[in-house]
Amino acid sequence: MARKSALVSAAARGRLAKTPLGERIQDTLRQLEHELGGREALMGVLALNTRSQALTELMGMLADPLHDRDNLGVLCFQAGVTTGDLLTAYQSGLMHFAQTLAKREVAEHLPAVTRDVMIRAQPMEERCRHCWGTGSITEPATKDTPEESRPCNTCQGTGWITVAPELDRQKAALDLGEMFPKKGGLTIGMQQTVNTGHPAPTAGGTLEKLQQAVSAVLYADDEVLEAEVLEPVPEPPAADVPS
Image (cartoon, rainbow, N blue to C red; front, side, top):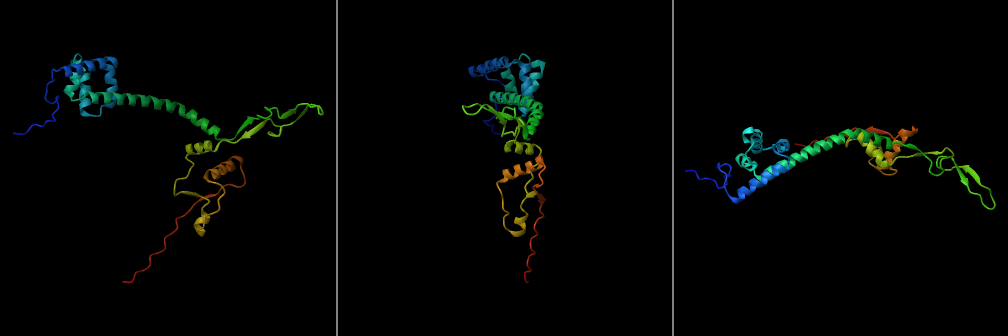
């Protein structure tokens, strides 16, 4: 005769124990179902996270009109779903629903944010804050000199100045445009290192070089940062080993 396992669930044994604890669980789940908005609302959230066969079976029971009057605790027992499994599935379904709505909000506003990033990553013309856009500075009168107006040195009398964007903004814009080379692809300023075995002289770090390259493109400088794809250096042939 086969020995029965001690791990057989109560649901598999086909009966629900009439104990104070069991009745308390049923009362708690009945109250929970009410607080969550009723069975239809509960089903709507659980449907987002039916990952197990037991939860799928429970969903079928909840959708069956024959079980409309059955206690949620009884249905969970019959499907083999524990209270913890039910609460975990409900919480996960809520998060899936909330994250979906959140991603929709992100998607709707992403074009505007991207447009703002790209605009702010470019040099912009602003009113001079030194002369407040007037192009001139008025020197107050003193005992020896009368009031005098002179051109603003900051904007050279134009009333406008060019404000360079922050390097982080330019880097974010280039990231959006996927303009950064992948490793092993485009190599900047490394030809001398490969040919001679000595590192090429550098002026500033990588971010400073990036800003110089962007400035060269924006202002059409004659000196443009050169870049080329380097061919791999062939390995020397292996020496013949005498037999």
